[in-house]
Structure formats: C-alpha cells, structure tokens
Length: 431
Image (cartoon, rainbow, N blue to C red):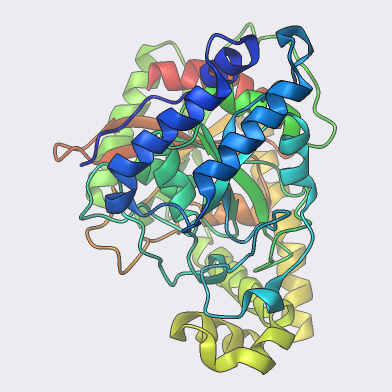
C-alpha cells in the first residue's frame, strides 16, 4: 500500500476558488505526492513537461481571475483525463500501439465543460487498450499486488491516491463502477447520453457512457451539475429513498465473500433507517449478458473498421478477438440488442413502480480487487445497469479483512441522476 492522500473535490475546489489555497502551491503539492506515489501506482501517462505546463497554466488562470468572487467553480482544480478522451494540445494513445496521429481528434464537450469551469488538465490517465480488457501498468494504491480495475484504471487509482480530486472515466460494461469499488472511491456513471460522448474514442456507441471519479459525493454532485445536459438543481430530499435488492440469478454471479459483505451493507442501511425491499429481477441475466457482449463486439468492429484494417497487427489479442467476433454479428442481432436496452429499462422501471423502489442497491463487483494486474476483474455485476442505461453510483462500503476496498452500486430510474446524487450523501454515510 502507498500513502493515500485526501483530495475531496468539493473541498479542494472551494479552497482554490476562495484563495485559501494558492493554485501554484497546490500544483507543487500534487507534484510531491506524484513523486512519492506514481513510481509504484503508474496511474498517469508519462509527460515530459507536466509540472512546468501546469504551473504556467495556473499562473495564467490567476491572472485571468484575480478576484475570488469572479472565479468559476473548478478554478485551478487539476483533473485527470482517461486516455481515450481527446484534449487540445495532448496526444491520445488509448493504451494502444497505434500511432497517435491515426487516433487524433478534437476535444469533446465533457472536457471542454470542465476546462471552461476553471479546471486544469493534470494529464492523461492510463486506460486499458481502447477501454476494453488489455490492462496497462496501473496498480491498486490500497495494495500494489492487486488490480485497480478497468478500463478506467489510471483514473480510479489517481483519485484514490489523492493525485487528483477528479478524473474522467468511461463505462461500456463496468469500467467506472468496478474500479471505483476496487479503489475505494466514488464512481459515477450517468444515464446513457446524459454526458456527451463526442471527443471520446468509442468502443460501443450503443452503450458507451462518459463517467468520472471523486473521493466524495459532494464533489460528485458538483461535477454532475457541470457535466450533465439539462441539469436540474433540486432541493435536498426530505425522505430517504426506498431501496430494492435485485434477488435471483444476477446476485448469484457475485462471490460468496461479496454476497456476505453485501448483506452486511444492507443491514447497515436498514439500521440507518432505510426501507429495503427484496425484488425478483434479472431472471434472464445470462441472455442480457450475451446480448450486451454481442452488441459491444459489433459496435467495436464498426468503430474500429478503418484502424483495424490499417493496424490490425498492433492490436492486443483480446481486443483483436473482440473486433473479429463483432464482424460476425448480423444487422438483425444489432437491432434486437439495441431494442433490448429499452426493454430491460422498462422492466426495471416496472419493478420499481410495482414495489415502490426508488434506488436499486447491489454489489459493485463480484468481490474485492483480484490479485495481479494481468486482469482488471469481471464487470458482470455492472453489465445490466449499463445495458439499461440507468444512472449508477459506486459508493465506498468498508473493506475486507485484508484491507481491500468494497463498494456498493446504487442505480435509479433513467434520467433521475439528480435524485440519485442527492440521495448518495445519506447512503454513503450509512455505508
């Protein structure tokens, strides 16, 4: 384990904006942390002039906004950006051996929104190859012998270590929620399409989500208000949400350890005053899993067609196999799989209506972070929520006897991101 530093986004943003902490001094503090931690964790894509660039950007920002009252909400906050997002002035490698010039593209809406809000780009964070399963060098800050999860490996690890208060991730199956749980931080996957995906190298346009990581739910809510389309400021909820546990074959996919821990988490929530209802759900989870996997493969084959033709020999074996499998998926299969997303969403909404459930709760992963970094773990517990496009938040929920973090994922109705994040504050306190 490396030394973990506190870097809650809500606190850091307020300190920098009000001037309680000098932006250049904070950059220097992060540099010290990175020098201590990064050689072991490997969360950031290497960059020759990172700290000089950041100090220069910090100085320009202070010159532009000398008065704290005029400063934007993320004034001077350094953010990590998963290396499938394009950033002006930086190359994109996507964890691959393809030439950066082949992958080049324009900076997208999500990154632009946070930069407009005053954020500074700390740098690119390590991703698995093209946000699939071929891992990079990143290790879990809680135990260097374990994976941080993926595909947003570097983003989750950097936030957990306190190298940045915020980092972008993406989720096509479980690439935000799972690494958030493995690294003991907050992970947010919004409703599908709520944060624009332009400027991000796609894996599956049908189910790709832009998400992010913070150490705190207050920071997660702050970021959501800046990133999500048509964000609705809402008052703090008066009542606790009614929670639903999806009983059946879905939960059976988790390990015995994970299910036992989850039951203790449910007990904590009940003790804190939350009503928990057991609901039969996902009775055909194997079919959902198969449909989602086939859709991702088909979309990947389409998205990577030109690159794969030119540089197919540079792809890692697992990514190459995904694309080749996708070439065999028929148009009718793709259409049926895309319809299946809405069907699953409607079934989950119907079950929520029938049983009076506001928020689903479930294990965020089949267990704690697996040992080794040759695999990023199994996203099976995240897959159906991603397939349905429901907003989902991973919340830290204690740790194993060996000190590995555990997480609970919470999912609300499609489009109810505001309610989910408001409720997350009470839920994380209870957990």
